Length: 428
Image (tube, rainbow, N blue to C red; front, side):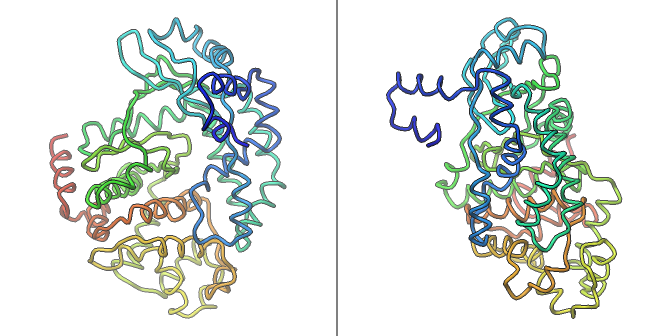
């Protein structure tokens, strides 16, 4: 039974005892708990933790095994980690320090603290030794290849493994995460609906990162908000995901509901920048070309040939235009037409099926399709973001919002939020 389940009905004294029993108290225990593929597998499970609809039963069962709850460190071990990284104990570095974490993830945990200047902060502390353990895991290509061939039987796992190795390796260095997070924070400074907490570099290092503490409602709470508020929240998530790609050439590749904090009026704070990717200008031009050929100036045959050129489609001439359109248009359906569209559970499930299910009507095409490194992390949108939109019942004219975001269209504001963003951009 998990720690959360065991403590749900426990008394206060019992909760304290159970927490102490559950904590990892030494670096060796961390490596034993999270090494030997467990750490890397948990990262993959975390990526897939919000997928359920649309998956074949065997894949769903396999992913469920990856979603293991990571135990927290004992307070003493967290203190040792902070001191080794920052040169002093938390009690000296901060005016206030909460010894027990407010969140635990697959490679670290987060503590509340207050700086000596009175600023409330969140301090992310990595488990000691987990970086070396996971890097060793990532060198075990045979296991990763086998896992990916099982989950994605139609894909060449080589490029995917290489990209996953790079992205997960990056996530182990909080200095890289801090740099990316601060770039987002600087870009969105003063934005009417998007908040990114700034990093405190003097209180950050390779395995400890301190940033401003932000608060808000959880995704599970937002699901009970009014339709108007849910739509505003979804609009901000959409503008953030695609605005980062096309305006910053940066993508925060973890659309996990636990990484968002919500406030009314569509205001959202975005957390956790470990799994991020920077796109080069030529990669963004590829995205522009794909959108042009499917949405703006449709040419299905040229779309197919371009995907063959990119290495995404094996033999474009093996399939007629209708087969190509029937498969690929689903990924752009929400922006194909200038009209409001509700993202439904059925739509999100079908999105997932087009990656995993080789028994459906598109099986032959799927067997020849592949993912190149440029597109690996982007599929987190298709496999995660739209699943969240389905839970919100999100409705909008996504085409018009997209045309605001796409720099190759640069359309006028189409919503009240768009107007406020345009005003913010003029004032910068």
